[in-house]
Length: 335
Image (cartoon, rainbow, N blue to C red; front, side, top):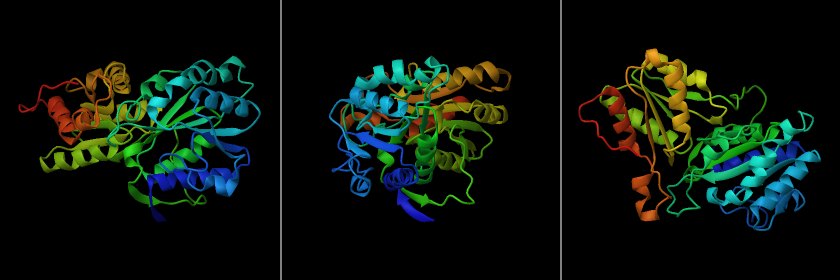
């Protein structure tokens, strides 16, 4: 067991995948000599060579298209998209090709492509560098969509994604790249948490709080603050945005009777709306109050000086908790 940053954990996960499987190939912009804009692939080209850690031109559609072709020939490509907002030129390849080819070939061909992408705000960057496009992919059948919140999950989930035979959109919360945490790289004797399952990080009895990515730590901080006022929050790290671990959420809501979902992405058509719809449909008789969603606003991502007003913080999450508890001082602000 060591202590590592999330960036280092991702680097270690990629190194292990490259070492264990000769069919794993990395491809992306500036991932070789530079080591990636966030240095996640630092040193890997020197160790494994330019034929397995490939510097690609600035053409995201061509990068994903190349990865699809490599997968068809039996490789396990891992694509790096430099920033969340740069994914859009590759949408045609991802949505109309990669997500459908297994189905289109009647299951005869697997396309094990992992697409890594930093997402979310909080680093002082502008639109195209701070976006949360996860709902586009969660809405697309044929893709797994996952995200990590700790160095250990970053390491484990990335290795699981690369080993998975399905295409995986792997979202990395960029403002957590330098967060330190425990990391166990051993394999023997350690049972990995299933890639498609969420996890209860803090048990509670009054409100279920569902989050993912960078907001996981904010939610844990909110739970600590709420506990000081006698309110018990159950914090769930969703981890998998498609498929969603509905049973974990519903079992929690049946016990607490109240649900708050928080994410940085805009409210309209977001992952939170899908979760609330499912819970309302299947757990209606157990709900003590209407569920609520704390989200980014339905606007383009703002300039850096305004992002603290855009990204949900501890106060906005606690305001959502107050709303579902019907506390009289709850605010009326809605995203």
